[in-house]
Length: 320
Image (cartoon, rainbow, N blue to C red; front, side):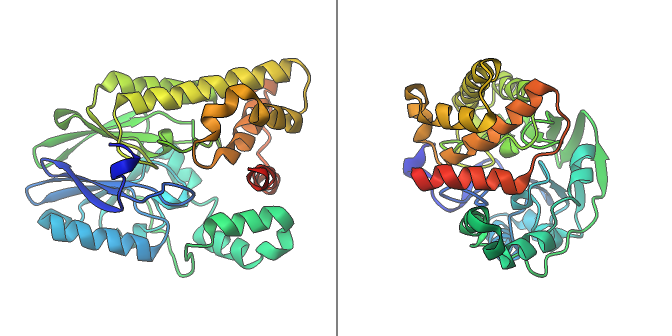
């Protein structure tokens, strides 16, 4: 599937499986998935706020009777655009990786609402934060507790369908999970894949993310539902892998040459070789990716300064 048929709403991908797509796949406009068999159902991720999640759930209930009462919810990672709607399926068994469960409490809906209310005091970074997150309503959202966690891999059943949860993080976040339905040739990747959009590496290490892309290719799935962007196949995983390898190598070259992280970001973003990737959505995320790589190269365990990162992205977005 390409951008030409990347349309909003529920896409039937066959035999009781569905994908919920949100063009244009930019900040906060994520995808989700549904696996059904008989009267059983498994939801892959919720959305960034209650309005968006309610719209999705209504469409799923109309399409599949088993979705009227979601049995199981799997959150692929802790970013709010994949879990802030959880309270609307709070009676489901909510499953995440152990690392994701720990991370869920770190950036709460109340924190996001407060940052939006006070964005004017944060200068250019705040203005960019409001630009990308202003379309969403975080007020009144409560995250229900996770029911079950796992490390590594976990096999589930949805009726007669086998569903394999594969932890591949830390990469995009600390606990990224793939949801593989092997007999149907489908994998839901969460934010391991951004298709036609720029991946953002909050956590790393980059080697884990590259390996996760290789894992998706090795699964051999014909249908790959990314966390953002149109439905793809194994070629989409290869494209994201190529981006990560490119940014890693470009950042390493500049790190070894002694460039500051700010100079490295500017140099990579303006280089001729970056041209193809500059056409991907949200290209300003190069700033976060290079900052994360510099921390990895130096062996630093210091947490990223979110305000600094949003300021760096704002500067690039302003120039594009």
